[in-house]
Amino acid sequence: MSTESPLAHPPATSAAPSGEGQPRDFIRQIIRDDLASGKHHAIRTRFPPEPNGYLHIGHAKAICLNFGIAAEFIGWCNLRLDDTNPGKEDPEFVEGIKDDVRWLGYEWHDLRHASDYFEVFYRGALKLIQDGHAYVDDLNPDDMRAYRGTLTEPGRNSPYRDRPVEENLDLFRRMRAGEFADSSKTLRAKIDMSSGNMNMRDPAIYRIRKVEHQNTGNAWPIYPMYDYAHCLSDALEGITHSLCTLEFEDHRPLYDWFVDKVDLVNHPELWQHLHDAGFQTEPAKPRQIEFSRLNLSYSITSKRKLAQLVSEKLVDGWDDPRMNTLRGLRRRGFTPAAIRLLIERLGISKQNSVIDYAIFENCVREDLDAHAPRRMAVLDPLKLTLTNLPEDHEETLLFSNHPKDESFGSRQVPFARELWIEREDFAEVPPKGFHRLKPEGEVRLRGVGIVKCDELVKDAEGNVIELRCTLDPESRSGMPGADRKVKGTIHWVSARHGVAAEVRLYDRLFNVPAPDDESDGKSWIEHINPDAKRLVHGWVEPAAAQALPEQRFQFERLGYFVADRIDHRTDAPVFNRAVTLRDTWAKQSG
Image (cartoon, rainbow, N blue to C red; front, top):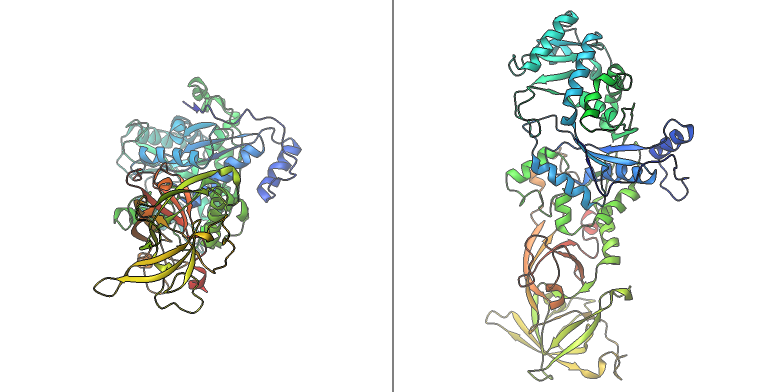
């Protein structure tokens, strides 16, 4: 039975946006034309993933398009789980899919499963047999492939193709009863074995698989094929526009063939029991429209390969922040708004292309620059002591939470005599153009004033372990010497008050733009970036340590970070780097 969401879109009406200020693309224009002509008075879409893995960035485009169009045209969008392949599907993935869709900011009208319609699919198959459009085939899978032909050679009719209707009905009912072994018989559509479209060469409709299903148990020893179940599911749900990616373009004739031949609209006896079970939607004749996939450089979106990364422990799980699963992107600190912004900027087209991953990262930076409060953290600490302050000196400074937005307010930052600064902000032998701290050099400490490096403290190996400096108290903001100029400003964390933190520095999982391209003789696994995850231990100001899981910040001068949604605790903070402040890959690729 369908599950109505309490947050579902309001009932659809004949009203539709004029298009002014709305996205313009060929799919939306088709919908506008359909509404203007009276072909449809309400727009209904669906997002139909198979629950055999977690969703990835490629799915985000389909989610945003289907749910976005439904909202724009005052319609609704269903979430439908395409669960026709038991054994490869898992309730864990179902829950993950629901969670990911909601995280992206969308709510479905009804939650449906293809398995809700198994009885209708079966009755529809009986109708196809009765009308002479389907037959039971005894060819084994290898022979079926051989009979199918090639792209340049037509297929051959199966020797079982002309079985009488009554024999086909009897055999199919016995398939349903579980009499036959797996793969021993197949129900096929009778279309055209000489068709130039391989999908129309008598495709399979049902196969025998005696596998327990997560929703229907052992009730069904036969399961429908995707091409058959998908289009009839759309029709049963009253979907007006079935939006899918370009690889299904060649399947569209078969999609339309099944919809027309089963003809649910004019045969209520096929689906009446669904109404009796509480399903209220009237069947419709949907229109399939294809659009280009979202392909990102430095990425893979193959579910098989993503699963291999997990199973071989090349990553830390489906939600590893290096993964382009939505769960991984979420844990890394990417935002739903950034993902929606990426989809909006790429637009909808029929042209497949590969998008530079930097575009995605820039969308994340743009969103976080506007919405992430600022904090100070030191990830590679070097001690700095202000020798002209008393040993017990301690004060509280007021810092803005966001330099571009006063509504973020301010926070108190503790300051003391001993500080941590970034090791790279000091150079004993500075390179040309170095404007940070050096022997006898001066730099401005953020919010504190100008300090001068007077003395270096080294360990037995000659490594600098402490800078002994003096602070010019007149150089603080509001003091007479505040206008004194120095070229560098660096951040810091109070050594007395800072909180030790684990920081995970994440980067792109692959170190080449096209890891699937094996023309260099390397497998895609060999292109995994060994520096995609680095662990460091640093110090954060107390206000950062108090973050809630999944709270995002800009660590000043370092990048954008998020408190890990699983491991972070206020007494043991853990932060993941989402993106650096600037594109660090541009120089490498240039």
